[in-house]
Length: 304
Image 1 (cartoon, helix red, strand yellow):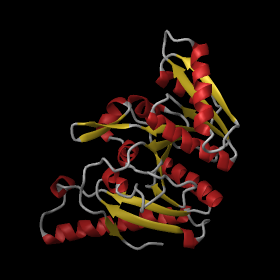
Image 2 (tube, rainbow, N blue to C red; image 1 turned 90 degrees about the horizontal axis):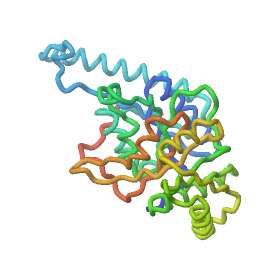
Image 3 (cartoon, rainbow, N blue to C red; image 1 turned 120 degrees about the vertical axis):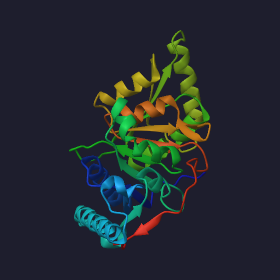
Image 4 (tube, one colour; image 1 turned 180 degrees about the horizontal axis):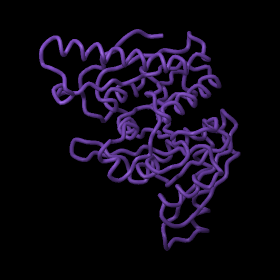
């Protein structure tokens, strides 16, 4: 699967929350840098049981409810349009899709639809995550293109310092190559972090890493990187490195595997997505979407 860089089509999963507005601002910075087009997508969830919302089952009640939903859609789209007014109109589309947000947005996260997806995340965990779910994680699971997730932030999004965890696996190599192409293109600093298992020799691990990286990164002509070797728990060490203030972005492999009919991410990638205080770029490791198939996405309203 050939992942495009720089991305020419960026889909932003947007509502009117603080993380979503941060995602919009980050997408605009990237689009201006790479002269990309932005598609801002708002997913409108329709309740299956209208009676639970106090909607009468007769035609008048349903019609009134549909009108209220359309008013809400237009209000959200207007707010999103205000956020995008500083972008050239020829490079911006604003649209709504109907359905469960994770499923509807995941349908747009594939080649031919987008090159990147940018989405905000609340970083929920524990009971709040079980109750509310995670749209951003669901998008990452299904996406066949890189997905940038970030929390609400006040500082402008930057790409000056990139951290790329690495573990010698094929999926990790693919993610690292993408990070290397990006670092070379934007002239950012790239640190490659390998967390050696307990009981291993840090010196031997550093030597093995050096040889592997020289061979791997020679493909993209990148020489200005720094290799770091730590020991301990990979999830803890990666999160601590990201929280230290030295990096703007973590690039991880969205290593996915089957679990019955569902898809789960590797534990390290999932933990980083949930808890990273800095933006995370997830690189897909499989060629086809692994989300469950559903009905085609229904577009609402007009494009701008």
